[in-house]
Length: 446
Ligand code: UDX
Image (cartoon, rainbow, N blue to C red; front, side, top):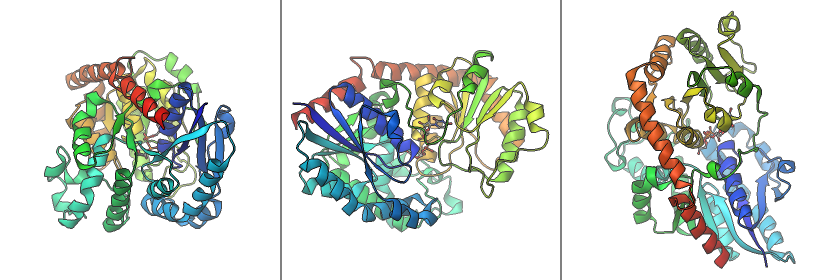
């Protein structure tokens, strides 16, 4: 008899992608897939005819949360509290179906912490999917202690102070979530970590060669089984779960560029910039003389509904610059013409760059991005951080350092080695493949 796995992603791009990648992996191992999704950022189920989708009708709740759009922590807390009954109804209805396939387990996002207890009450073995790094788990565990010790909120004068408990992080690299109160953040992270303790194990989108120390540290604190099975996207064809329409014309444009010459610029699915920063970025890119693709997401310029580029900019960059609103990112990074990636260091983007061996210019903004950037620049040493006020002259300098100077060549060599490690992890005898086998065996045993 076949078995069914239930999946529940948090409805943001950086969380949906890895969950769908797990779906593809488990489906290829013979499991049937049922995905719960919310009305907010609902997934286009027509793109996944092999899976069953169940809508958790949170529409009214999400409308009420409209004003919290930029405040992810409060949104996550509100969802956890408000969706409990809705999710309970969906889950009990699936469990009561007379179906040939029994439900083997649920895989939920780390942030859906209340679901853990609900699933436990209903007797459904539940795994947590951590879509970010293993290191973030340790930062989140330590965050409430740092609040207690008075290190958080971080004082301006202490931004560069090392965080002894979380080397190599500095105070400025600790997770930040907009203006959300640090005690609220601490509480929410404590809930998330406690719920992992109550789970059947945690699946992390990472691989041993880059994070085994972080995993060991986490397991000492929370001794549940850990399955590092990343980079998930390398086990499946590119995800088509985009919440925005992608512009594939950039791939043809890349075909016409010299190998390793193009800078790809994209700040993921949430990060925004001020209008002044847009202007500096535009002229920094133009003045660098380097060919580039720049993703400017609709709505990503604060206070502007439409993207207004500086006068004459399009004329100046014609032939060597391309602006699009959403890229087929994995294909772009894998294209031979791309030589560097200016990124916000969302975890998916960071992993995707590592897998394609593309060195990074790091410009993190919030949540785990600062910490990810610190690992890129100071642990794996495969990127340069662009710190301080965004200014065209500094942008030109950092692009040159990475794409034209010796420093960049050394970074590129380290990145090639890291790419190789990533490719080993997904070979049939690689650490992540072995961990997928272990996970499949555990799920099959339920
Ligand atoms: C943010 C966080 O920074 C991340 O670490 C956290 O786990 C989730 O929230 P996000 O801004 O979505 O994530 O960035 P990232 O984690 O990099 O994910 C973005 C995804 O969108 C990537 O898979 C990337 O390939 C894709 N993308 C981005 C595109 O396909 N096209 C684009 O133009 C831009």
